[in-house]
Length: 142
Image: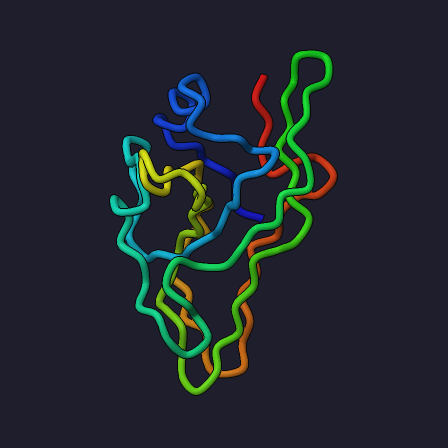
């Protein structure tokens, strides 16, 4: 599994009450352009082309819980974000970006991303899954 990298603005956005991670809708979208830690909103990211099983804006990432215990906050999502190429290829892609699709100001703020190490192109019938850790959390804040 690729390591999770947070965007710098995400920390400020938490303090500014931009995110309600207990109820906001989060999504995962795909890109082949390296995100920068300084990116703040979805419009800062170059998304792969929609089509062949990939919809613009990506797929939902179901939030199970946002909880705190012993000073460690844990964001848990239960369902993976999955795409299957149909009628052609998807990609190339290298990064999966987690963002909050609920806020309108700022519009679609970024949370973090995973780097899969090299570009991937899915041939028709192949599946790509961003597995979200339902036990240890997608990410923790200490």
